[in-house]
Length: 256
Image (cartoon, rainbow, N blue to C red):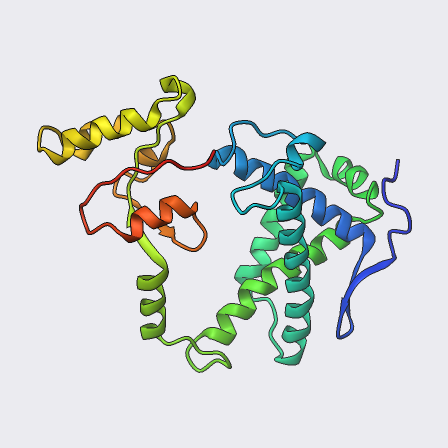
C-alpha cells in the first residue's frame, strides 16, 4: 500500500532541479535508518530505537535527535539539487568509476530486499521505481565527482596542498582512547579511569597495558589511533584532546 500521497508533488527545487515528495520520503526513510545505525555503532546514547520517545531525546548538540536528523537530511537533499545544477553548468558527468559505484549500490538494495521484484514493491510504497532510485544514486555520486573535479589541480575551486595540511592541523588530532561505560562500573567509570591514569603517570603501567579494557572497539579497530575532528566530536572530549601534547594521557567524562 502506498504510504506517500501525491508522490509527484515538488517539495524542493533549485534552478530547475527538483525533488518530489515520493523521492524525498524514500531518502528520509533511508537516511533515518542509517542515522539510527550510526548512533548504535558509536554509542552516543545507551539505547537506540525508532520510537517517538527516542527521537524526542536530546542529542549532544542540545537538539533532539529528530531535529538533528531532519536538518542533516534536508541539507543532503539541498546538496543533491545544487550539485545537479552545478554539474550541468560546468559540464561535469559521472565517470566509469562513479557509474560502477551506482550499479554496486543498486545491487546492494536488490540484495537487501531479496530480489528486484521485492525492491520494486518496497519502492512503490513511496511512489517511485527502480529508475528513480538509480537517478538518486547518480545524484549522490555526482556530489563526490563534482567536488573532486572542481577542487582538483586546475579546477574552479582548486584546493592547495598547503591549505589542506593547515586545515588538518587545525581541525584534527590523532588519538587513542579507552572507553569505560558507567553501567559496567557501578556508575564509577570516572574513578576507574582516574585510577588507571595515576598508574600511567607514575610509570607503574603504560597506556597499552589497559587498552584491552575499552568498552568500545576503538583500540581493536584502530590500534595505532584514529583521526578526530575537534569540531564534530563531543565537546569535553575535544577540549581534552586539544590540551594534550603528543603521548600525554588524560581523562574526561563524556555524554552517552
